[in-house]
Length: 304
Image (cartoon, rainbow, N blue to C red; front, top):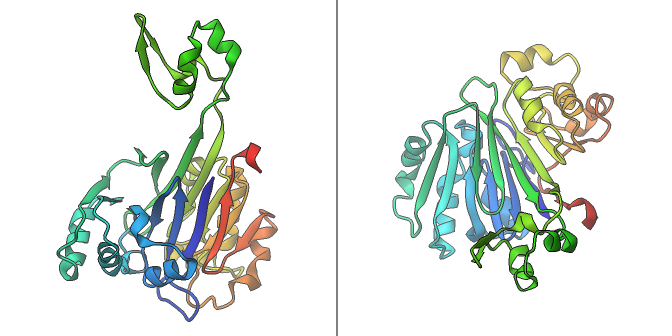
């Protein structure tokens, strides 16, 4: 299962009750944070999460509402007695940007590892999942992310027998071991059926709609997408500032055939985004206008 929590839903500047952009996911004890706007630490504490478990922080881009909370968060991670490395991922220039922000956090008890995105699509294997970055279209270099969790096929004893896999190796192979014995190499694929449907979460903010976003989000169990403007007639404003309307986000969700759409990253002028949810639901019915702290758990199909 994959836990998802939308910590902050604000764009540009925070409002009372609305922190700036950030999203946390948890899988197998490892936490991934996407963006780190102002208020992220408080939002983490409100949800009962520990910053100690954050192994990866991925940035969509380097505007202040997406990264301004990083220095304080790094200090808090250090104060949590973490010593394991933390991986930072973001567009080209990440090392330089973080280095400048660390003027107030120059010494940390853990290593920072940097992965800079340089291609339109990049896949990064992490803590039991794949993080796939894809380029968005904003007024600075910006990326969206898909978190993909694959699921191996079921154990098939008849297949194991057919492939002459000794019974004594079955248990170890199911756990992913590779066994060299009797002049043969025994691997998991010799005893498992076809790969089962996994989980897919896609997150994208600060972008105009693009074909690559639709392709990258395709088949997602959950798409979290910006909806900077909710009102009908705001399309020109969205184009001018390289953002999306609720309707445009819903159109992406429809074309990508996702299961559910969460809207986020609202303009500070959009005080009551829920008043405009119909502009999304009339295009993609399973659209939701989210508030800070909205959370869910994505389950593998057979666990539901």
